[in-house]
Length: 104
Length: 380
Image 1 (cartoon, each protein chain N blue to C red):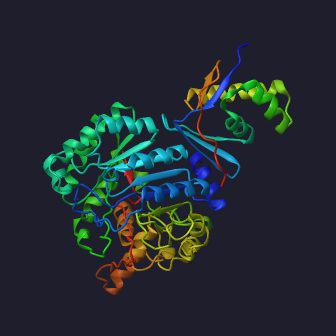
Image 2 (image 1 turned 90 degrees about the horizontal axis):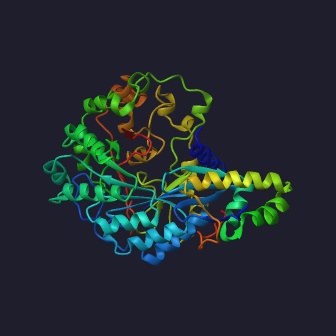
């Protein structure tokens, strides 16, 4: 299966609020909140690290979840957010994405 | 509860500011008859100062930022400000009259990822709109701007401030909004000028016209429900707070002054002298605003409308007491339901002639009262 690379779109608004990430698409005003696992994927979406590596190296280790389950969840998450233009997905490394967020 | 309402509740519980209204200038190319601002520049913040404020707001957790004025495009560095705001991942809304927006500006706003543009339109007829803005040709230019923005796929809304002079054109503006494919918002709130001059209040629509608005199904949806008598308030209502001003939102003027809301000119600090978070957390004024619950309002807590009224604490403050009634909102509650407010009954009994409106003057700063009452505007 082809590798997936994910990057945060620049056409979004985002902020950490009490450990949860708020994300809104500037294109269609869709609003999401991301739980800690989704936030970790989001933060790691630098366009250069393959999704499988994010899952194996970050999600499985930080959240004590088996790889197959984590990969399924990550694929669903990426698909949904990419439909709203919030995450960019490619089978090739992507250009630089939005800056990483600060937490209040 | 919607996701946004949940986030608002979370921000409230955490004591975080979720939204900030930042006026980048009071200068304007229009001279609207109802405007409350002094359009001279008394030393507005520089680009670097505004960028610094934006960075502080991002660190503080602010998500929504409204950039307004004056006319925002009077600042040559406006796009620089928007660009930095977007780099900091704010949800950016821009309020403008659109007169200076052409194809290039519309494309730039789109490219920067501005979420929404709100544009003031007073009438569908140039002779009425231009007489209010005192800028000949302004309606034509504003409508042209809306078309440019729409062609870029941007979300645009028309803000229609209603006065006696343009009330009869309200339907025409709704129709214009439909033709342009944009949202429509109306607001019947007119405030005194920032120097305390109350002459603008004479422009307000008469009470009977308010009643007509509240009974317009196109604007309010289910009229019977919207105009129903208020239910008896429960404990949750009496422990509630009136609006987001000072709780999850605040306003910053072009001079760096911080207020609970654009319509609540209580000076609470200045970002040129203090860190934003220090003001947000420790300002005695903001903390006083936050401490007020419905049960603390001497007149309003006894009013049948206490649970459903759009009472604006800023307008109450301008009448002399932030814990007092806001007469304009009493009138709205009355015209909506036909039931007089406790304040109206008290005034009738005492032979009260009308509210005294007094605005506190600020040294080297400018309390600003935007026309919109965020909690009481109606949309179609």
